[in-house]
Length: 403
Image (cartoon, rainbow, N blue to C red; front, top):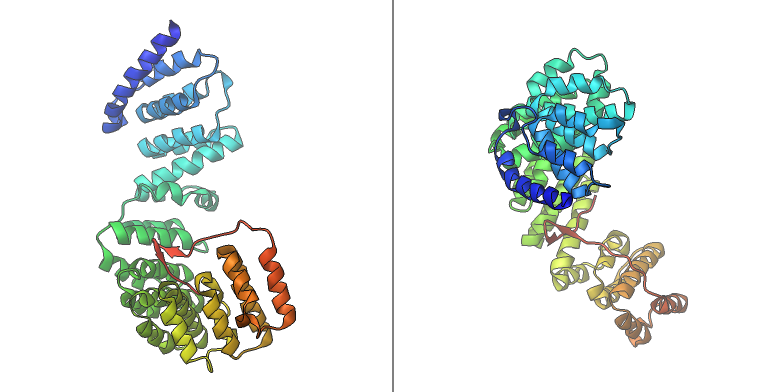
């Protein structure tokens, strides 16, 4: 009978849950949520259902986070980390200053760290300027900042340029939050309706690796729809490595629309490393989308396009392995690069179509290969399957990116 009553109560709680989610818990008096009484009833069971426990704890924390903490810790229980984080998340949102003071007084160091990491990040995301003023008063500022998770504050901080200033102030004096800044710039860029303001903000920042990563994040967002505009941002990037990544990404997306224009862009880049990386991106993307066109281009230039140059690319499309092998026979290059290219092609081909690989190796077309190599690849074709794989997609589109 008790179980039936409890289940009925929880059903009613589910109906009320929609109301509780629709209104801010700050408008509810402390302890008013039916979740507290339902938790007490459910706790009388031998073991509370984990899903029920999770839902009730969320409702309690949204209604009254301090009270939810008391209930969670009743009778000296040791909750799991996710439960501590759940209460900390709601408390940090509702009352950041109070959550910070409470969290710093938690005796258990593991529980204290779990609580503060989430609560402080949520406070910063909700009230960045208030949090930053509080942070100035803290002796362990660096440790506090190091523990804060972008996964928490990034979900709630406003998508506006002012949030970028707050992030820079948060990490002032540190090495810089490359991933965090890049992620927040992308978030503001995509959702804040302030694209020109974001770029103007970046140009006002001192030259740094974190600024370069932010420009790269914008370029990656632009490239699928406007690869030329993405490429134009390369002048904003000081780091050769990051700039090379940007131009390679832009070249790959250009190749989706016009491989010849993409090749011309790659050739226009000012240094050898950037040119080679972009060229690989173009050829790789071209090969994925138009194998006949890409191989025709290589065939026309087989005297100058060597096996050394294409080795990272031509082994990537086993569907046209036989055509690629015919090209390899004609191309110039070192024996080492030729062997490496053949090995890449054969390994991919075996996973794609073992039967086609066997037939080709047994045909007159394979007679040009040294007997030792031919035997090795015939043995490879008989080896058991290996379950390796991966994808070569960006936002659902296949492209090749060379770093």
